[in-house]
Image 1: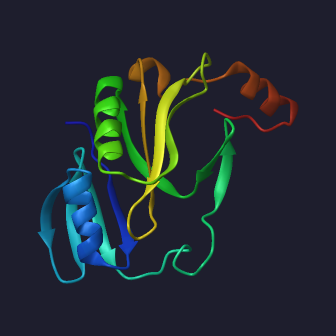
Image 2 (image 1 turned 90 degrees about the vertical axis):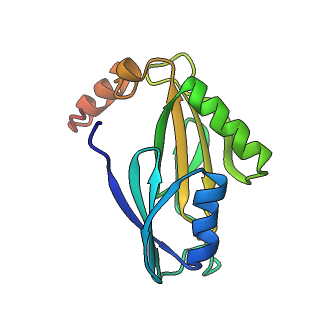
Length: 159
């Protein structure tokens, strides 16, 4: 098993958000208390913690960053799937009538790092991204030479 990540996120309604992750996303539930719930998100540990108010609940918009013509919500988290798993998961979310921030689409078409991606929010306003590559090993950390040339011109070496 690769090293799973651990992520703790704030939620305003523990039960509603737990049901979303378990019933809609298909997470297995682990340990829990009255204020937190451990979840298995594709082999990674996500912990829902009661507390905090999202920008959406405060009447604010989520911060975003322009990426390949889309406003990507930040922060966000998610999982990289294979193409078959991505398509099956996207179809499951569409059938569940999830409101996408960015509907399933292809980003960086024909470029290094070409990927299928989708963004949506959980009931507490946490942004999730799921993505897939045709060749995860070759594309996940693919570089683009023009990015490196631009960085060198600005004297900011990117890796």
